[in-house]
Image 1 (cartoon, chains in turn orange, green):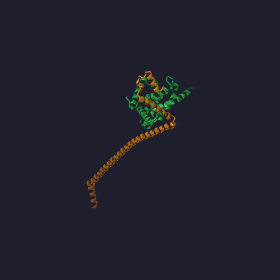
Image 2 (cartoon, rainbow over the protein chains, first blue to last red):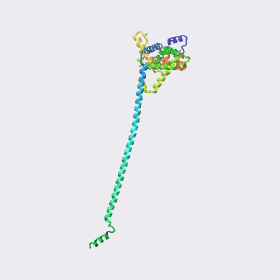
Image 3 (tube, rainbow over the protein chains, first blue to last red):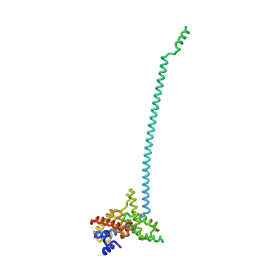
Image 4 (spheres, rainbow over the protein chains, first blue to last red):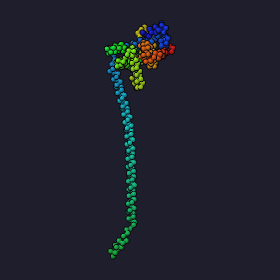
Length: 148
Length: 174
């Protein structure tokens, strides 16, 4: 039974009491069948139209899915490698700075040690020049006796 | 025997299921895909169909659920919006009944059918489903209630609201 027949039958039988079937508006009563016929005509045209849907649509979807996954993986890999590189770079910079500081400390220690050695050497030489040997006067006397 | 029965069901109801899905999605390719999925699912569960409702109502229920799942998935996966192949309202309303005699009547009919499509587009998913089942598929309230798993009172309420929206779109009273 079509909508119009259903409506007409219910109207004739006095059954039109709920809002659903109160389509008494003349515009609606004219438009709704046109809408239905329009959908039917469109559907018949599309239903009979040959389309290679099973071959194309899943393939497109599969390609899109694969492309989305690839892009996603590349993005994740890019972000991950950027993080790893950044961390490695920071560690390398810190290692170089520590090595440089250690080298400076070593040079400074060497310089200090060298200065101490030089100072001690100078003191030794000064002392050996200013203070005569304990046997020196005797040696001189012996030398004078021999010459006589 | 069961295979023959199912084959007959497919032959009888495939066009109607496709039409409902086409009207719901306005996308012929999507409607075709969902129709195929509908009959695939029906074939898998054909053994459990006990005939409590008509085969058409049972198939329509499967189609409605598939359509619901489709929209739910699209909402979850926002990038799929770019894959929307639905035709616009103007194109959907191009298919007019051939009974219009004059050019003026055809233009008026085209305009009004377009307005109905506009109203249908703005309806909620349930309102649109019950509206299409009633006014395109010409199912009665009991069948609609079974196909949508709603009670008849709820179906009436949705239909009433849907009609009010269509009336308003056409410039009538709400």
